[in-house]
Amino acid sequence: MDKDRILIVRCGEVALKGMNKPYFERMLTERIGKRLKASGFSADVKRHEGLIFVRYNHEINTDAIAGEISKVFGVASISPAVEAKSDMDDIGRVAVDFMNTLIAERGVKTFKVEAKRADKNFPIESPEIARITGAKVLVGCKVLKVDVHNPDVKLYVDLRHDGSFIYADKISGFGGLPLGTNGKGLVLLSGGIDSPVAAWMMAKRGMLIEAVHFHSYPYTSPRAQEKVEELARIVASYCGNFKMHVVNLLPIQEEIVKNCPEAETTIHVRRFMMRIAERIAAECNAMMLITGENLGQVASQTAEALVVTDASVNLPVMRPLIAMDKFDIMAKAQEIGTFETSIEPYEDCCTVFLPKHPTTKPKLSKIQESESKLDVEALIEKAFESREIIDIKA
Ligand code: ATP
Ligand code: MG
Image (cartoon, rainbow, N blue to C red; front, side, top):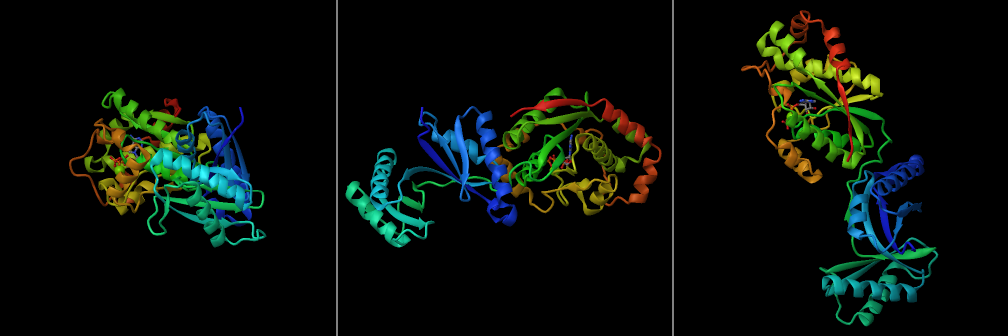
């Protein structure tokens, strides 16, 4: 069957990439194609003059295929469109058909036409193209009136040298950059609200993701881990399938509790998490660690604590949420669909052995001194060796 429907996909920041623009557009086209294939949509995806065109068959639900494309990072917006020849008669005819469909489907009563002439050789200028098309629509769709201030529908005419497009809706994407254009990062993924958002934000900038999750079984339950897997699957619905390394931190936590001052427990635990993550990152070629840490959120995220945590590793630690307010992070979690899962009440390994009065201003030298009582390298190696690796599939 012919692919008789078309979506116009606009590239976001990709469009600003100067000399590298073709590379980013190619990557984005590839990502859209792969995503549609993986979700079972049969479509042709081609880029042309700074836009990406997706052709599909009318048996495919337009909202479903556009919804899938809107989750691809790098996509700014999508418009279901109809095609016309680049002459005023054909544009008028197609616009009338298009508007009649909208009248039938949505009870549209008022409209306004906006025209853009990409082909500057076309003899009629944009305002005139809009005027002529509007007049034809008024004649062809008797129930319609023009309202230039607050129309039910804005009808766009995009006139190009090799054909024109007519559309009304712009479905927003998330923008960002195509996945795979910015290396790979290892995210420390907990069951909380923050870290899935942090992973999503880095992936949105084109970074491929792999994850590590720490538990303290049997103090934490298998259900707590299932919750994290569910969160990981939601993240994967944007950034593709990935591996999640699952590490039991309990033996290390017990060593810390036995050997170090109680008030320092959390900061030691966090330094170990970072080091184990760094060990895994070396193995999976991740260039950075990613956390959902946020300045001042809890005792382990004061400026001093973050500095002491950072000092445990050599890899750069990305904290995309560092300066966000909790309400904004929560709103983002809702927008990307992780919030409801994140607020399910399951224990996290960080809440096991939580000190009553945690240090909020740890000193590196003092923390290192306490740590010297532990065989840090051996503990890391053991945790690393005994990790489990799970395939996360969206
Ligand atoms: P929230 O703050 O919403 O409860 P959170 O995931 O941010 O959730 P924090 O205690 O603030 O939890 O932890 C700070 C960061 O440390 C997390 O964002 C995450 O990157 C990492 N982290 C915490 N606990 C774990 C864990 N069990 N496994 C992996 N990473 C973790
Ligand atoms: Mg947090």
